[in-house]
Length: 248
Image (tube, rainbow, N blue to C red):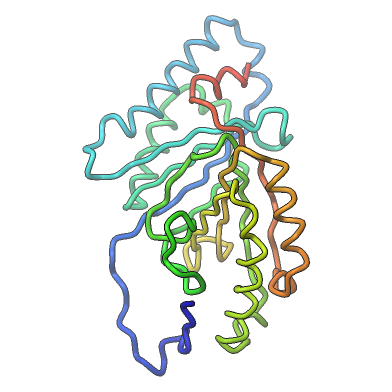
């Protein structure tokens, strides 16, 4: 395993890592009900305009920018959000461009954003580089029909533990997860760029498997060092036209 005996870098004096990494943005949107009182033809026009703006962010960009957009519906699943756009880019300014395109659409006049999480992909210090582990340097988004997301914060006591203590707890945590092969974890890091420390998302076709996984992990020692892991979002993968049709 990858035990880091000097996580603060003070002993080894490690240089700063400026390698190119993926940024992740989980942008949640809530619709004002007044939109549903508009004539059907006008609603269809506004949704088509929004669809073109969202898809144009990827379609108009050169392939080497590596922009990724994955839409999800939360209609009927949560009361405070209606859909989510999972945006991935190597430059956080690309998220600003995407949002600016959306802000110029008329539909955005009926939308608010109750939650908007920013994070960054980086190599985990606790797991080996195993193909399919979900802890590598390339996010593979949208593999499952569902995406389960939550922001995550550890207690400060976690960082006061010895590296070997933390590694032992994570070994237990990882081993407890082994039977749940239908769930793929994407862990990303928010230190210094957002309120949470991590954003964790799980791709799966099996909600029942994810529920059992989370239940089992509650009994691991590492869970004692969780400060916050809410709100939790169950997102249903759909194409963007289908996501917008769910709005009414």
